[in-house]
Length: 118
Length: 132
Image 1 (cartoon, chains in turn purple, red):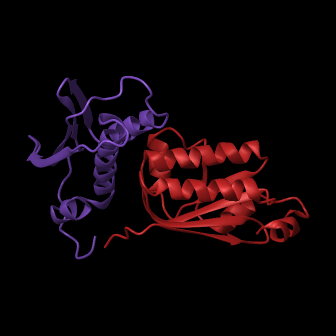
Image 2 (tube, one colour; image 1 turned 180 degrees about the horizontal axis):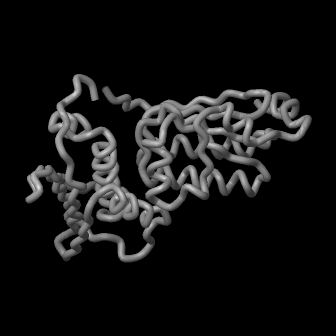
């Protein structure tokens, strides 16, 4: 994801934030979506969009098909949500019987010329 | 180029025990860091435990939880826990977003850690003698 963002001209600090937000969203799936020991899948879909101001924003959807534990949320999980919110412009969580989707929109950026090394 | 390998080693100094970690502190590597920090904080008689995280390139909420609980454990053991960070980008930023920057004390360099925390006479001697 770091490399992918780098190739699209994402500034380093914003890149770090997007990577952290996505990591936290996927960690949520690992922690909560499936019973301990069970295997399951999660999908991450990311799409850059151009805002009305001509900036670029990344829309990321992290989806699982499990049931979130209703109770027993681990103590550091609220921190995960804080990090997701702090690193993006918006976070929306949609839970259904079929699974959970976390949709995040990055802060809009102005692409910078791609560096030779990230 | 990003360094994915996580390593953790320990060094005993006259003034402190220093746990040196590099790479990414994520969901999987935070358990390794936690056990190393726990053992260090509980076993040493030095009253200053330092995590040199200047080569950490990523930290997630699980890693922040390790830092916070290490600070709490150190306090229970009458020791101080400090984290060295190379820049403001990775650990200080994550701590700030999570509202934990008052719980975990970070310093830019080892010299800053020592100058901010003068140790009582004799502590340095004890630290070196008892560490296995």
